[in-house]
Structures are given as C-alpha cells and as structure tokens.
Length: 305
Image 1 (cartoon, rainbow, N blue to C red):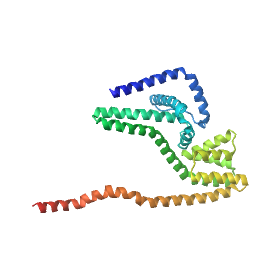
Image 2: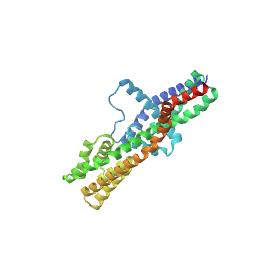
Image 3: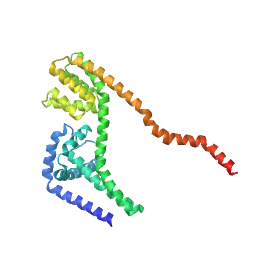
Image 4: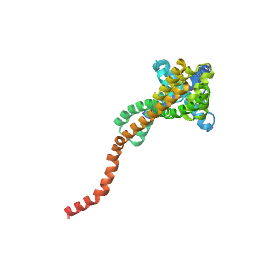
C-alpha cells in the first residue's frame, strides 16, 4: 500500500508539472534563451545519436529544469554560483545549476522509491526497509553532485597533465615569429581534449571583444589548477610588464617539467601504501591457503587418527 501511494504521488506530481509546463511554455522558452548566453558557444542539445534516447534525454532534462526552478526559487539561495563553478570545471557547459538541482531532487525521490519497491518484493524487514530508505534519500541527493565533482577532478588532472605540451607548442610558434594570439590559435587546432576545448573557448571570448589577458583569466576561473594558475599569471604579467613572451614560456616549460617529475615521484612513493591493503586482505590469504592448507589438513588428520 505504501508503494502504491508513493507511485501515485509521483505520477500526480509529473502530471501537474506537465500541465504547468504547457501553461508556462512561452516563459520557459524565454528563460532558456536567456540561459544560452552563458553557454560559451556550446549547443544545449547534442546533435546525432539515437532519436529515442535523445527524446528521453530531453524529457528528463525538461523535468529536471522545471524541478530545479522550483527548488532555486524556494530553497537554493546563494548556492547556485557554487554549482555553476563546479559545472564549468566539469566541462558540462550545456547544463545549468537549476538542472543539476533538479536532478538531485529527482534522484532523492526515485532512489528511496526504488528501494522500497525492491525491499517489498524481496520481503525485507520493515524496520530496516524504512531505515535504509532515509539513506537512499541522502544517496540520491548527493549522487549527481558526486558524479559532477568526479568528472571535474579527472578533467582538471588531464588539463594539468597536458599543459607542458601546450607550453612547448607555444614556445616553438612564438620563437618562430608568431604572436601570442596566433600561437594560441595554432595550439587550439592541434590540441584535443579538455585543454583544447578551453583554448577554443578563450579564443571565442577574444573574438567577442575581450582582451587576451581577460580571456586567459576567465579560462583560469574555469580550470583552477596550479599549472594553469602559473601559466596564466606568467602570460598576464609578461604582457603587462613588456617582457619577452618566448623567454617566459621557456622558463615556464622547465618549471612545468619539474612539477610533473615531482608529481610522478609523489605518486610512486604513494604506490606501496596503496598496495598494502589488497596485498594483506586479498593476496596473502590466498597464498596461505595454497601453501599452508595441505600441511594443516595433514596435521589435523594425524592428530585425529
């Protein structure tokens, strides 16, 4: 009965949301057009793919947008700016903070409902069923944010790892006679992955009228890593002081190589500590069973006989 009541409430909420969406469709389209200003040139709908999957994805996105607007208008407060920064670090430029909050609310509703259904089918005890349901609410609320933060961490690590390659390419092109803007354009066409995307965004902002230093500072705001911070600050200070960009980039390249070597040495020193746990709990027990098992079995037989 509780499961039927929950499902009925969910269906009632979806029906009301669709009715309200049909009424306020024009206002929502205007709000979406205004939100595309901060999309940095990326389209909010990915072209291609399976049509059925695209329509289902669009339906979920619209539902998350609607729920996110309700949450931001009543509960979110000043949290929207922090979510926007984390979304940009993850490279999800087509996602808004409201949509992320909407997915958090939807997951916080669907996770406990699915758990209650599963526990009811399998005959799980009622006390633990409702106790775990509260844990599922917290898990559903945190899971979208955890995925975004995980994507942002891997993306920033990839940018920091590829940064010496960018600096080497800029050194070659600048010393060949190109300016900084032309060197950045060549690097944006050569580099792939998150670093190439950020360079293309910075060049697009420069085409919109921003100075090179301002575009690089905005790129630093989207990718806050130690290597990117040193790169942007060196370029900005070099342009403001009139120092040779080629010499600055060459010194910065040497510094990046030293940082990469230090990071590799740090990871190598952490490896034995990380290997200790699987070694003790997974490898050693299997070795003891193989080596000492027959001897222990023969000893037990000798004592019992």
